[in-house]
Image (cartoon, rainbow, N blue to C red; front, top):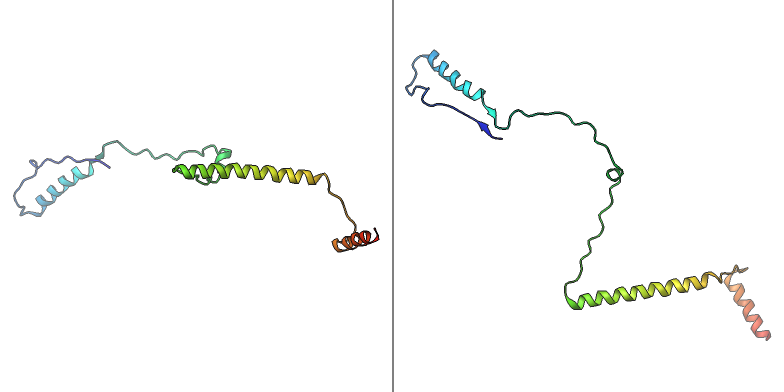
Length: 126
């Protein structure tokens, strides 16, 4: 906040005041200068802003994604590249395995132990 403060020292007498009334009159003249100070940029214009339009993004802000720190050393870069390749291959083989088994699901009657007993009985007969 910058104030314009103008006061002329020549207009004020430098002697000491004996009478109370003259002293007070000089005090009021100093106060006049202080009261008439204005801010350099002018008066503040305080108006309340109307409600802003709320968009969908403002209502549901996304959570911050985890920061990815890439390696700087060459060996670390190669290791990360290899893990990425192996991870991709692992996912591919897992999906292939699951897809092959999905077509061969069967509903079996009885518990696992009962089915194993039946299988053992069939093998003994043969």
